[in-house]
Amino acid sequence: MTDDTILSVADLSLRFGAKPKVKGSGLLAVNKVSFDLKQGETLSIVGESGSGKTTIGRCIARLYAPSQGSMVFQAKDGPVDLATLDKAGLRKVRREIQMLFQDPNASLNSRMRIGEIVAEPLEIHGIGTKAERIERVRSLLERVGLSADAVNRYPHQLSGGQRQRVGIARALTISPRLLICDEPVSALDVSVQAQVLNLLGDLQKEMGLTYIFVSHDLGVVDYISDRIMVLYLGTVMELATRDDLFAAPAHPYTRALLDAMPARVGGKHRKRKVLSGEIGGPSGLRKGCVFAGRCPFATDICRTHEPELRPWRRRPETRVACHHADDLDLGSYDQPPPEPESLP
Image (cartoon, rainbow, N blue to C red):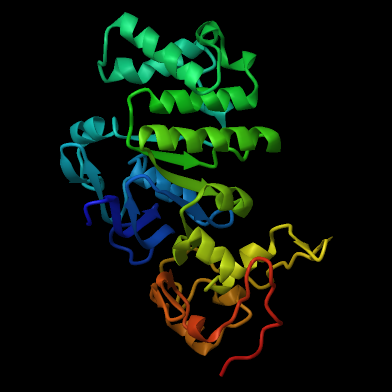
């Protein structure tokens, strides 16, 4: 872990419903995920529904206990492994790690007033007097674009965008250093999405926040990210900077995600490409690359040997899990690749 690294995840795995004496039992939701997160950056995790994006975020927040691996967080009092912390340790470190949920309507208690919702973290951690808490709540509500008078309103009296702003204020009440954003704008109108994304960007600069941003929308990810991690069936396919990933994707699955985005070529919308093939089951007994069943470049080695996440020869700072990545030219976001040719 370097001096500017706030979180280092190594071989993180989570299996739901596993039986201790039965090898490969249960649902393998996250499979040997590793990455480092630098202070002040935004790492986005993208992939289709069911790829394990949200599960990784919940593991880091310790809403789920991982089956194996480590998650070393650089807390104010020194590094701690989130994977092994007991309840007392988690209670202390959660002041520095907060989560922003996808559906603001479901994540806010409909029976509580906005002021009570935002002040609740302060009460749980015993921070400040009642007057200080009220002042803190009013200040935060104004900072996220709401009137201080909103403290006396209920969630159902606010719009979806306003409710998500309340969720942001609640998450920032106890001054966290790491904020895990789980699809925070997917339930909002497009115009409101831009407002919330701009707000998150401004807050990051002002407060020195670090974000893990979970999304399936590459357009949103392109706007807010420093780096992007592409996930498929709980396995990392590619990890690259935002600019590098859009300029030259290294993995066929990343290319497929880009092809699913709307874009204009020569003033006209290009036709979207849809992946064919069968989605591999999320089983611990599967062999080879998890994407082999849908990959147009798959060969026998792809179906029998799992590729390692390694530096890409064309751009070593990019890491890719593909046997044939060094031999492929997948174009860019604006330049679709030619039709796939058979590999030897």
